[in-house]
Length: 265
Image (tube, rainbow, N blue to C red; front, side, top):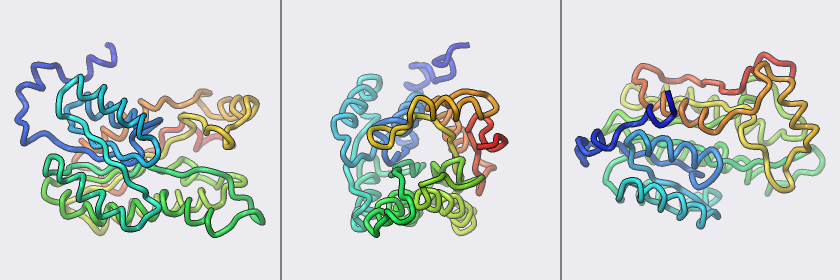
């Protein structure tokens, strides 16, 4: 069975009532994992709002592609998640597009090394803002809207939050571990109207630019995990969609890491 056979047919889309179509907001949704999540939800009948900060061209290209598939099913919003004032405004602007919100996916993330002795407060703020602070305050702002439709929140964490910190990445590791605990805390606070879950990816898309791993590092990581492979972004997207649609799961985190948790990494 091909991947696209899992998606709704055009006839099924036509039978949908516009006012009943669910809406998902994906932070950091213009590129990489976020774009895969946005596209997968869109292929499965959701209206999609893609948040971006610097990736305007990528966001516009993705939105154009999605709206060519089905008109008025995708939109983009720019917001700087390092700016506290942006959190409530992002949720307000998202709700204003189709006047509903069913799923918030906290995917936006900053990633770079912060070795002890070479790290400053600016580094702390950058890593904690996107990986922990923004997910909390966006969830808080979105909660009244999500509650109307028994919606849910999905946090994209990191499999290292389940196991042990990454060498030279103490701030990122702590922020993602905090997001894992935040997932459980929000599930407790927002039940029964809103479910909150998380996906913990292994190495999906390798870091870029100055944070890039060497070929040797990539091969060592892949060789050490049980399935000896890199994870596909679509694996993360499908897991997020499963959690969005499974109405009896909350407070859980699913690791999609090719068995990294059981390896010796």
